[in-house]
Amino acid sequence: MFDNLSEKFSDTFRKLSGRGRISEANVREAMDDVRNALLEADVHYDVVESFCQTVTQQAVGEEVLSSLKPGQQMIKIVFDELVNLMGPIDTHLLLVDPGPTVVMMCGLQGSGKTTTCGKLAARLKKDGRKVMLCAADLQRPAAVKQLEVLATQVEETVESPHSGKGEVTFYSEPDKVAEYGKAVGAAVKVCRNAVNKARKDRVDVVILDTAGRLHINDALMDELRGVNRAVTPHQIYLVIDAMTGQDAVNSAKAFNDELELDGVILTKFDSDTRGGAALSVKQVTGKPIKFIGTGEKLDAIEEFHPDRVAQRILGMGDIVSLVEKAQEQVSEEEAAALQEKMAKGKMTMDDFLDQLKKMRKMGRMTDLLGMMPGIGSQLKGVDIDEKEIDRTEAIIKSMTLDERGDPDVLNNSRRRRIAKGSGTQQQDVSQLVKGFGMVSNLSKQMSGMGMVSRMKALAGMGNMDLSALGSRGGKAPDLGAGGSGRKKPKIKKRKRKSR
Image 1 (cartoon, rainbow, N blue to C red):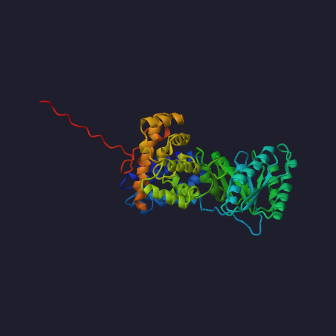
Image 2 (spheres, one colour):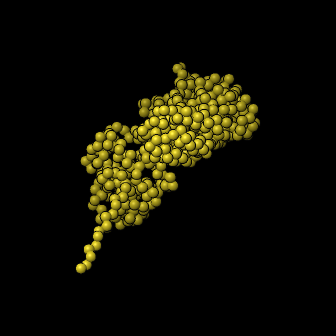
Image 3 (spheres, one colour):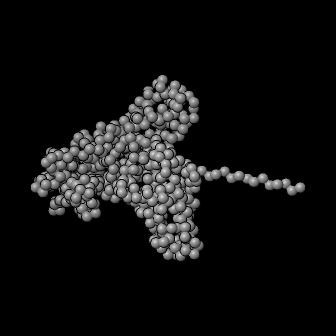
């Protein structure tokens, strides 16, 4: 998300950064570009006008026009206003004591509402909560079954670190399900029964998955109002598809007028969409974005942080989110042990494969690289093959234990054997060994650096030629001693003239 918007912002600020001084005319010209970029991203017109007016008023002030680095000052103003546009941070999920806390989920059909219910239940289970998923979408029989499957998956696959205290149960009344338009009103009683059962079973949180709407119509909105009156939910969340732009924002306003929402959850945030909903919904509805869906898996839901999103839009990366994702997959003990190995240059192919698997659990490689400062802008047009990790695993597992521990022993004969055993080409094996050596050497160099030097090295990776990542068999970027990835200039030897 935001790729096109980020590119337009970068182009605009690059023009300003090239000037020693800027005038009011320069600022207004830059803001015209920003306005066009936001409108192309499907941001609400009123939001765009308000945003540009505020930024222009601040930018034409004496502080910017007289600054030695006006481009940087301008970026800071835009960053602050983007944060203000989407913020403040409000990811708090109100839990009452004694329970149950009732959370009502609503949204249009196809927004990912039912899946989001499962993700939210998984998140709460990890926190040690006892959760009940209630199937109140009686307009579609498939929705009831889908929620039941999700409840089972969460209960069986999601582990809670809190001594197994977390639990997910499922409640439904299948006999109340009917074809679309004929089960209107039945959900009120189902929700009331679910909350009563949750109270008896000492459930911490009840999540009500209400019927999706093809559009805003009075009959179905009456049902939502009835559920609201019957169970008085503590939180009402609207799930909207980030790909639908201003349509999603208009729907959010209509739902908020009827139900007084407590927050919004944006789904499909990992998609190739323009991002207009994320930048508009808070200003239009006055309600905070609580969470964002970043994939299909049950753990693909994150708290919404306006400052981090603003950093991504402006090409600054998002190191904090990247570190948080890594901490979810790697314990402190594992990280310390690996760092010690890297410092001694003793990292093995098994260690390398283990790290690749953990990275895969963190998300798509393109998204992870995009969180690193300076690299996101280079990913345009680069199609990173996620199946490359499968091929890497096949190659490593075709090696003997000794070969995994010391790849330097791999001669041509061994490489042919490994290629045959893994169903790959010998050049693939050679490329993997070369890449492993590069990562191992870089890790050893960085292990002796201070924090500031490490960050400079990571920032320097933004100069790498990432096009090689998109094609199998392409050469790995040569980081060299400085880690910049820039090719060394070739020195032409002068031929001696024959006498």
